[in-house]
Amino acid sequence: MKRISVPRVHCILSAADDLSLLPALVEAGVDGFQVRAKDLDGRALTALTERVVRDVRPGGAVVIVNDRLDVALAAGADGVHLGATDLDVAAARRVAPDLLIGATCRSRADVEAAAGGGADYAGFGPVGASTSKAGLPDPLGVAAVTAAAGVLPLVAIGGIEPRTAADVVAAGAHGVAVIGAVWRQPDPVSAAKELVAAIG
Ligand SMILES: Cc1ncc(COP(=O)(O)OP(=O)(O)O)c(N)n1
Ligand SMILES: Cc1nc(C(=O)O)sc1CCOP(=O)(O)O
Ligand SMILES: [Mg+2]
Picture 1 (spheres, rainbow, N blue to C red):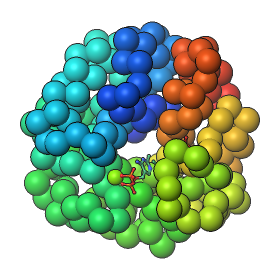
Picture 2 (spheres, rainbow, N blue to C red):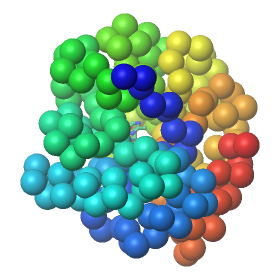
Picture 3 (cartoon, rainbow, N blue to C red):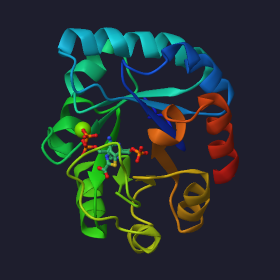
Picture 4 (cartoon, rainbow, N blue to C red):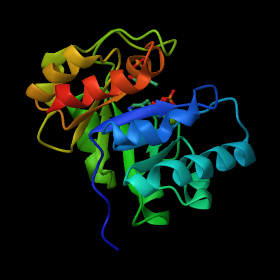
């Protein structure tokens, strides 16, 4: 089976977000949703992912599950995003030859390793300062995107808002992943439209 394309705007969501907005976010041009719900057990995460798939797939958007390959497969999602302490990319690829697989990368060497394991994209960051996650390393900056580009599609993450989205794409990123730039805005759908317009 042909693997689907890597989305350009990844909206990272949890059960706490206003999920009634999902179809409108797809309409606004968001083409990827990552289900990231650290507090949910496997069953609840599967149910949440199934709901997101139901809401966004009719509009053509892709659903990626953070951390959990088993949940991605069980829920019929399109992909999984793996971090440094999750299942190894090569092991995930053996189990799921057709799934979209993303890997967190913080350097060009990380991107090369992820590509060697069979990843489809690198979640590259943190590019800027983020208040959405504790314990992140210092921001890499936009120049690091250019230094890491050309191996895998880079999805820039960390403090991305419309202006920085345009900057990272100009620097060689394929797309962006965001939490605050959508969910912490007074009008998440208008904010998503701005983000989509910014990446061109
Ligand atoms: C697109 C994208 N890039 C990086 C991350 C970070 O993933 P991870 O290292 O697994 O950390 P958590 O998100 O699980 O805290 C991501 N989620 N998405
Ligand atoms: C979940 C996550 N992972 C990151 C990483 O660099 O690994 S940065 C991040 C948070 C992204 O949220 P915001 O768009 O609000 O900064
Ligand atoms: Mg993760």
